[in-house]
Length: 144
Image (cartoon, rainbow, N blue to C red):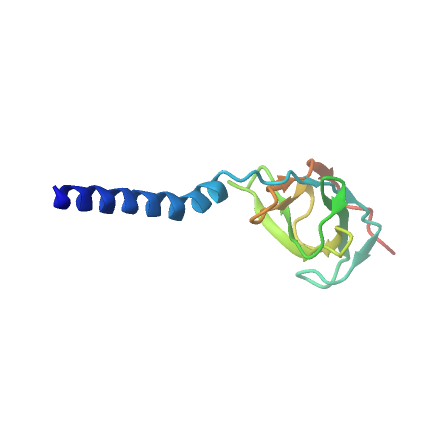
């Protein structure tokens, strides 16, 4: 009889330990990520000679926006500027930047920015991923 009681006590103890060990993991797995919002606007106003040929001017595309969560800016987060031309099979990352402490970002590039562009944030352990609205960019007129 004592062996049966000992076995039951051990099984109950093991089950209790398993429950205590897995409960924090279950809480973490089902934790709600805070929603994020990402904005973008294009402010291209100049050209540069920093192109492949360095002979003719090419546009210096400039984008800016803000990453927020629950009304507050998120600083120190990586933002990726992406482009999807019809000739590409999938979107390509053309530039990256990190948000300022208030969540704002700005990025400039001479690479392939004509066409549909957007920025994306991949999220982290407490914040959900997000993508800005898509904006269509056209090259500014060549400078003098």
